[in-house]
Image (cartoon, rainbow, N blue to C red; front, side):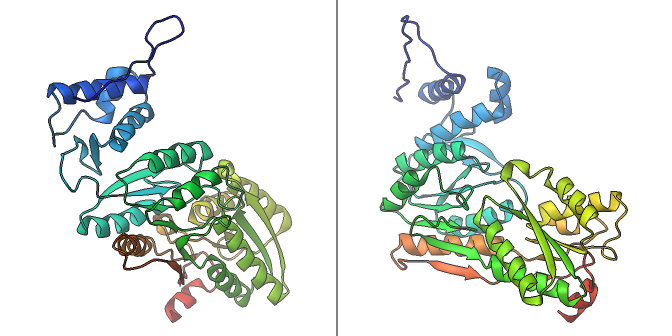
Length: 370
């Protein structure tokens, strides 16, 4: 029988939060046999309607029951009562800034493909680039005895981590921990990342070779990828002795930094802009076109990641090819090797290819050459 905890207020009355009520409902269903082993429980939407709460609240309840080994969530299929078996503890946790959008589904797919073949389950967590969510998930992972390894992308990696003590505690556990996309410089770690600086250096050098003389950069200032990409941009501009400037934005400014960048470009008459990623480059292109700029005749625009956004409109972005699924596969294979003690340390940096398209001067010609 699974125990249900009671919470007592100072006045002697029992009080529970909404997510705890949902947990108790599911536990009672398992105890009574209403939710049988291996069977699907109610969907998150159904539970949200039943308890008149948000899906986020439902998700928290389900995640805690997953940590406790009572439920298993299968991507695209739903949530099931966990089966009691000898292999039930074979599980790898993945904690990234995002899960369901941009390039992250492909990274997750690469990880999932490898670990499923090895017989491991997958626990997915998203910080939404928030220290608060990161702390909550790190504590849950650290306290979960059924996790065999962790693949992780830290939050706001360019800043001193507010959760550094938890990262140190996690790394000290007797399980493999591998960082992807970026690292935390304050701790020694295993990692698989991309060569961000050299990729943007090559991209910027190509812009200059194709006649761009006044370059502008838009980079994320609170993660290490953004800082490294800026360094590549800066190095190329200084070596070519061209005029350049840049602005930095934070996670909270993601959705409107393109408007600020467009205003600066219009005022200062830059002829090329190097963006942190496609998620910034595409709305910037749209904004610049609204302001009367012709792309690439008046201004060249580049992105990073070669996401689906890169070819979404008539402006096809010149961008950097992030390995996405390959990176996920590499991280998963390294993790499995470390679990099996076939590998003790991982430190890999992946070279990235430039994809040339019509958002930059000479883009088509460069594409044909490639």
